[in-house]
Length: 113
Image 1 (tube, rainbow, N blue to C red):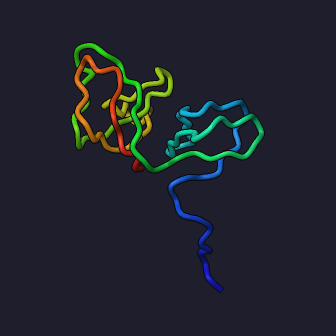
Image 2 (tube, helix red, strand yellow):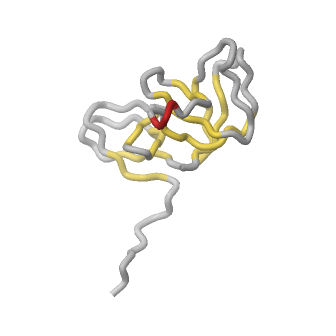
């Protein structure tokens, strides 16, 4: 008997939220971070993208730049991408694919965990 059974390709995963989730919301489940593809009503099966390239909000001001090729992390409290892992408190989103300067309000990141 096989020990692993293929279910589907891994660009999206099933997700049933406890509260309404809007399209574009970033969802953290342990070390797994996904983005809601569409609005998902509470207690209703939906999907999270766990692959792809997304623009995420980021802080502005000195020291907030993110450089292409470096890791980007999700600060769930601030609801922003950052270059700071915060000793594991911020969860890895993936790799920055386009430089974002201190004055940019968003950063483009390829999800990969």
